[in-house]
Length: 357
Image 1 (tube, rainbow, N blue to C red):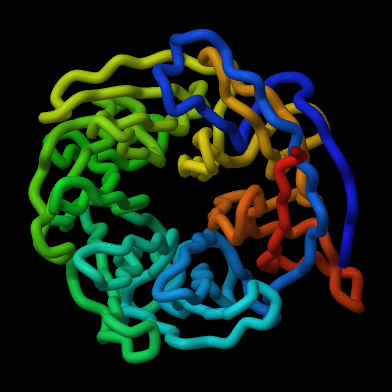
Image 2 (cartoon, helix red, strand yellow):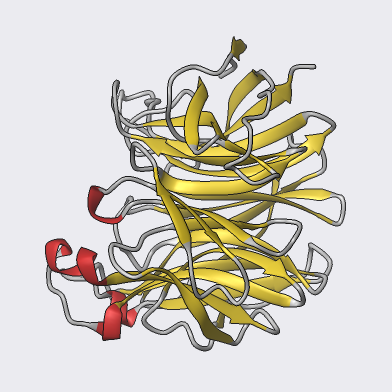
C-alpha cells in the first residue's frame, strides 16, 4: 500500500518534537513534514508488533515481536531482526525466543561498538498462563559486533522482577527503562497493580549486568522513552499508567529528582529521538476515531499533531531512523488491514518522512 500526503501542525496529540534548547524557552518555528509513503514491510500470518529501528555500521535494522497465537502472553513468541541497505529490501539476520517465556517489546541500543537488542520476557510455563506476574519478569539481550553474527539470548543480570523497555547510552554507561512493583508487592489484578508500579532507570557498564540508578515514577509507572541532551540531562516521555495522561520528564545526573509536566492524553508505546535540531517522539492516541498511530510536534510543553498514519485497532510502538538530510523512516505496527478472508492482520509498516524546506 502507498499513500502520499502533506500535513501541517494541527490540534494536539502523540509522535512529537521538542526543541533541543530548554522546552520552556520560546517556541521554535516548527517545520512542516511530508509523509511521502506508507508501506507494509512485513507480514507472515502471525501477530507482528512492537517495533524499533536503528542504523548500525551503514545498514538499517528493524526489530519486532512475532507470535502465531496473538498479542497476549505466549511461549510461542519470538523476536525478529531484519536488515536493509536502503530501507526498501529487508532480510532476516536473526530470530530468537526463550523457552517458557514470552519475549516482547524489543529495543535497540548501540553501546561500546556492539548492537544490542533488549527484550522483556513474561514467564509462561509450558503454555499461556492464566495469570501473569511482573515479579517473574526478566530481561534478555542478543548482540552483534558486525551486524551478521549474533549471540544467543542472554539473561540480563539485575532485571528479575523488572519489565525492561527502551535503552540509551551516555558517558560510558548504558541505561534501561524498567517497570517493577514497589517492594515487589503481590497484586492479583490490574487495579491492585497499577498504583504500585514504579518506572526505574537501570544502568550498566557492559550492557548485560544492571543496577538501579533511580526512579522515573514512584506510582502508576509505565513505558518511558528517554533522550540524553547535549549537557547530559535526561528528557523523557512517559506513558501514563492506569489510563492516566502522559508526562514529559526532565532530570540531571545523578537522576534522583525529576521535573514533570502532564500532557492532555496518554501516549501508548512512546518514542523520543532527535531529528536534526528537534526531538521526535511517538505513540498511540486513543481519542477521536479510535486508536491511531499519530505524528506530532511537541513544543512549549504541548503536543501538536502534524500527521496520522494509516492505522487502527491494535497498533503503535514506533521506531525511528534518519535516512538522509531532512529525511527519516518510522516503523510501527497496526491491524487496520484484512487478509483475503476478511480477517484483520497485524503487520509491520514503514512510513517515509521528509522535512519541508
